[in-house]
View 1 (cartoon, rainbow, N blue to C red):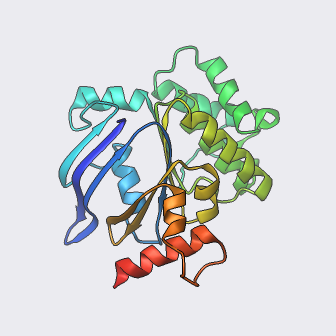
View 2 (view 1 turned 90 degrees about the horizontal axis):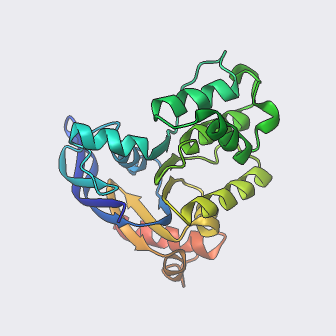
View 3 (view 1 turned 180 degrees about the horizontal axis):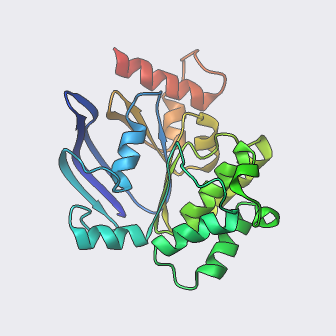
Length: 245
């Protein structure tokens, strides 16, 4: 397993944003669903080694992120797109992705950057400054920096925000391709993205994982439930309703 979580809790003063989570994730695409405030972003930031857990144990790619040497090794093989991505507006797309390639100590960064930029459909905008891009293009530039090192663990927080329907379909195909050789964790509130791209689903509520299984198993939980326009949405709504009782 590339992600091994046991009893993970993350507190901010008196509030626990993530509560005693147990989760193992192997290769493939894992969708992390849940309403706003459920703890998805905090869990992803912990997996990205941005913040440490308050308690519990965490191993990523077979290493302990609490150890300085282990954390550095993890970050070389990690890709992360935060929900709110900062950037230098005067960087070009190529310079922006190259900057992250250098931080990740990518060998031969030039070809790696060119490949990542092409993967996200920005090859013709590689020399454009970030300040000239639309919101959807900026999001694609963010995805490019996350995959420039061909990560073994890829963490994406709301990656399809700002993408049009065609771009979202292309992105799902990219996720499936990456998931054939790596672990991809996608945090989203868009149930349809999970159904189209994910092998496994985790549903968070109030900092806890209240469902973990396949999209098909989540769909089955919605039988007889009338909230939601699609079978997977009805499963999502049914599990949340049960968790709230």
